[in-house]
Length: 269
Image (tube, rainbow, N blue to C red; front, side):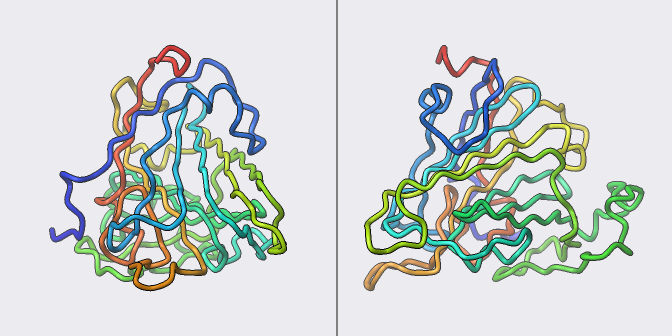
């Protein structure tokens, strides 16, 4: 199988355990996030080169939730889309993908906090992995269609996309450090805080422990897409990621970062 990224260069992030629930309000000055390990700076999705603005992610978890935080440097914070499942990638956004062996989930969010969600199942696994027996993945439902990637012809073939699928129990919040849609001043950026219940990941687990066991590794992609590009001679594709894919396509799970779960308390590391 020919994949555009090297498995030897995939980032490995350790997510530490949190003994208490988090209030999801977009405020990343909370003690738990202050202690959480921030990722390396996102790089260009296609070239792998340094980007003009800083973007990082941090993760925490407990037995109920996976928590994800994005730190987005942006001098002019803008967003226009307000309706859920609008094409959020047409705004400046950040994106989260969570992969299982035979399926993956995509979430996009803009600075308004508006989201877009899709659940993708590899077509060749739809029957074999038992998805055809799950009512939520019935092919006759509205919003189901074939998907063949964006800029990369994946050797595994096509996917079935469920644009009607919503992550059960998802919590989200955004904080803008500046003024949204007002370019009369210079903003500092925006932050995103997400809480995804493990109970909503049954269709991704494929027999893996929920919540994860100590040392388990899941594959996730963390990215940012902009409606602008840095001026020449920068090689700015407009998409940035923790784990570059070296192709204009986020839908390559083999290029997703590795997230390892540790039961060591984030306050004791």
